[in-house]
Image (tube, rainbow, N blue to C red; front, side, top):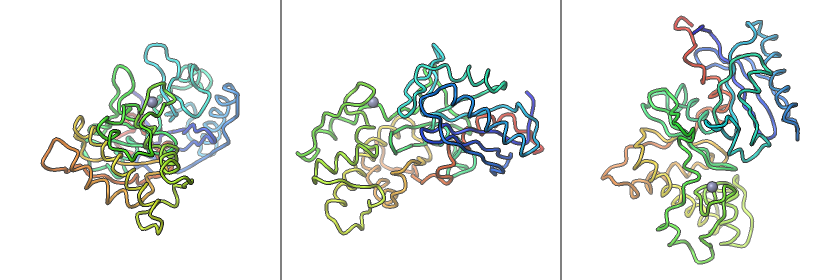
Length: 314
Ligand SMILES: [Zn+2]
């Protein structure tokens, strides 16, 4: 395979598209972005191509370099059609093949949680860890798994999708009476972890418990309002319960968290202590850290999808 000294990544989000050139040490040297075109798949493809060509023109790098792209969902390994995209109109589109045609270059694709896990395992919070479970807790809940530097990709292309496992029944059985344990998920199942641990899930819990709204920025265990603290404590316990299932199965060295709710500092004190009680183990050595690269995880992880092409001398 041809080697390179820099990598090209694109993060395709619901409101904006960001492209970046990253060097072999993980330093983003150039960025470009534009709003995500509304209601036009063809315009979205064209916008991605233009961003790539703009960066190649600005940097003087050889054009038609391989592209890594971060998306909200993933292509079905059976049909190649996008699925599980909860925030864009990509579902049902043959995105990977269409991008390769439109941009005239090879393309690799991964969802946002996989890109977070790969970015952090490559040169972020998990750079020293052998096994990393990357978690996104934001508008949705997703996960990705990196083992010894490689993204785990199984036959169904759903590795790490813990957000659509059900919240354990024993946890639902001990909810406060005001919370109904029957939340319908957009995927068609009931009580998916996402329905409880996403931002909208937390807001719904707080509203049902206390009758008013809540914003993530306000959440803190030091908050003077008892209701805020109670909602956050419940959230931390449910998060620990859900992560307990992951640790029993995967036993990762590190859990790294991204997404809006990962910015709540007290989670990193509360959840590890709670997690230790949820495991089939007498110890819990798994660490939980926030993502080091924050909002850049998508575009960086997308670029790292071509890590095997970086030349050793670079
Ligand atoms: Zn679901």
